[in-house]
Image (cartoon, rainbow, N blue to C red; front, top):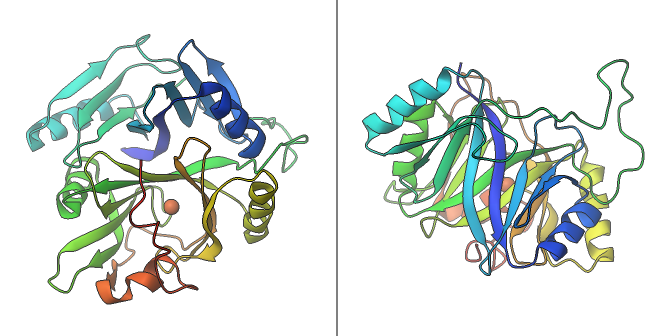
Length: 302
Ligand SMILES: [Fe+2]
């Protein structure tokens, strides 16, 4: 029972036509549904309704991030846990949100709106479930098979980490500690991968990036080719993280939201021990090859 994985991220952007062009032609997602003021996207190997929605707003930002629970009953337990923690919970009823049934929404200690949902419309992937081939034909752009994780900012990383552990049983895989032992970064998982959500010290309510999975290191190199060809602003990479050991490239969508595609990393079993990075090793923790921040990574967010 409990949280299965990151379900979707809901962001806002000032140009939906540009967003549609970039997220379909460069990133290579499919548009599942379109309303007057929102776009819904999914990756080719995802079967749930969407992994990303973009709402028209003059301002770029994050509306919420949403995790999928395994069972309908999980929502009741999570509602109780969040209320006991001291945060109000709103029930979203079936039909209120596009592509999904009942969910719970609440504010987190990091000042974000978080959602937990179980009932999501199944729209199917691009591959059949009977005798499938390994990859669909006719993919455009980077075309990741699925969304992987989200990284948010929090003024008090420790507080947000505790909330995710206490209410949703997330496991801490890695942490960054200052010389005084203050937590400035936390990486948390439910899915057995290095992280489903990460929290880095910064402005409450801010989004650092969301990230899509690629199957191969060579696909990260290919992503760099596609991004450069399309004149997309690359933040950093291809490179490798010390934290998670993942191979990565970061870039900005044309409206300014940071995206990542990445691969690799270890398997985080339930008995996986917590890895600690000290602040004096922060450069290698973030970008293992470069050994330091690029002057943007720790300061630019939406
Ligand atoms: Fe990431």
